[in-house]
Length: 82
Image (cartoon, rainbow, N blue to C red; front, side, top):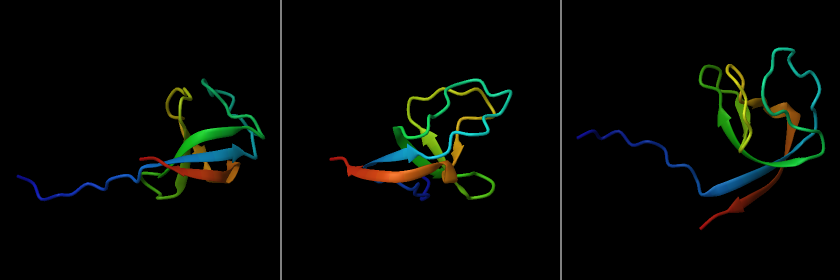
């Protein structure tokens, strides 16, 4: 039996407003956020760099994409779930 304890995410739903929708990559295939819209998101650290990345829940994107830079969004609200 392993004694490794994995971190348990907090029961929080985060919402963020897109403030920068410019510079969409030419080869990007998938959903792209629109400036001014509020999205349900999950902010996770990048695996290699540790920098925060925003994942928009319900968005589809082909690899290697799927996350957006944190500077493109501003946090609007955190809703605690029970």
